[in-house]
Amino acid sequence: KIGIVDMKRVFQEYHKTKEAEKKINEDKSKANKDLDQRSAAYQKLIEQWQEAMKIVQDKLVNAELKQQKQAEAQKLSSEAKALEREIDEFRRRREQQLQEQVMRMRKGLLDDISQQVEEKAKLDNYDLVFDKSGVSPSGVKFLLHSKDAVDFSNEVLTVLNKNAPNDARPAVPEGESALTPKE
Image 1 (cartoon, rainbow, N blue to C red):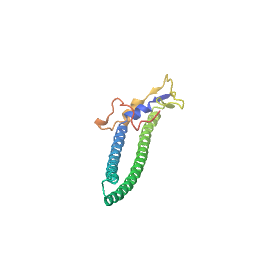
Image 2: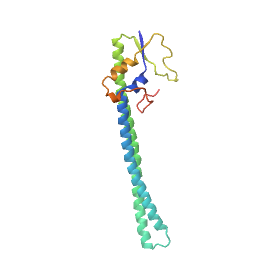
Image 3: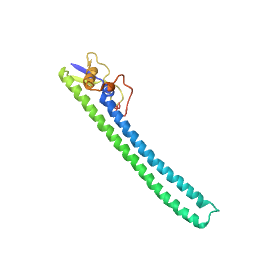
Image 4: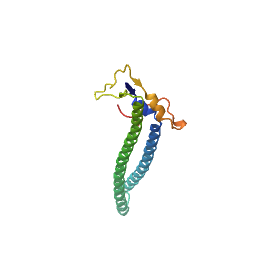
């Protein structure tokens, strides 16, 4: 007895996938906001440095003020370089954290789905269950034809989404998300 499941569809329509996607998007938005604040501070330092350099290069300004503005420009330049390194490090670190978070969430969701598929296969005494959304390393669909196989994706989704809040019950998939498994 052979069964098939569309794991991609089940993943996309699982209500917890939408919740995880929302959480990831909130975290990305917060990281972008933090990055924008740092970038604004950096831009302000650059503008202050440019103003100081205008005075330094002005031939009508006295030597004492030029020297003062030169020292100020040097200090602003050092601060800007330090902030630039901090921004780069922050961006790299947050991207890595978000990527790890996506992978953890995705693994947890796939574990839930796989467990439900396995329970359904044991309950209905399937000998083999194939993922009809899977592809081979050459990019060809793994399951080319299934004459007598039963697709029980809907049953799996019904069980997985039985405790979903009403507003989280998925309808038609909206396309791929950051958590969608890649083919």
